[in-house]
Image 1 (tube, rainbow, N blue to C red):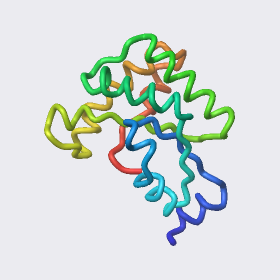
Image 2: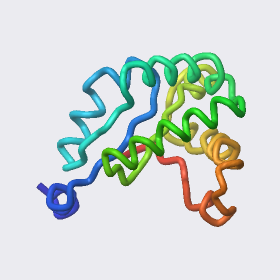
Image 3: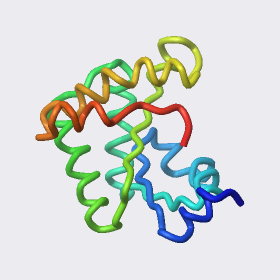
Length: 138
C-alpha cells in the first residue's frame, strides 16, 4: 500500500460518482477506488436513473440544458452535505460516440469545455472553475 492510499484510508476520502447508470450501479470503479482508500458515493436510485438518462440524451451529445445543470448541482450538493464527499467525478461517454473509444486524452480534451459550461451558472468564479480539470484517471 503506497503512502497516498494509507493517507486516504486515514482521512476517510469520499468521492461522488455521477456517471452512466451501469457505471453508478456497478462495482468496477467502486472497487478500483476502494483499493486506493477512496470510498465512493452514488446518488439514490431515482437520481441515478435521472442522471443516466440525461447523460444518454444530453451529455453524450455535448449539451447540457439549464434544468439538467440545476438538477445535477442539487443532487451533488445534497450528497456532499449528507455524506461529506470531497470530490465529485462526472463521467460522460461522449468520447465513445465521437472517437469510438474513451481514451483519457480525448476525455480531457472534450471534458474541459463541458465542465466550463456545466459550472458556468453555479456561482463559482472563473478561477474556481479553471481549477476543475477533467482527468482520465483517479
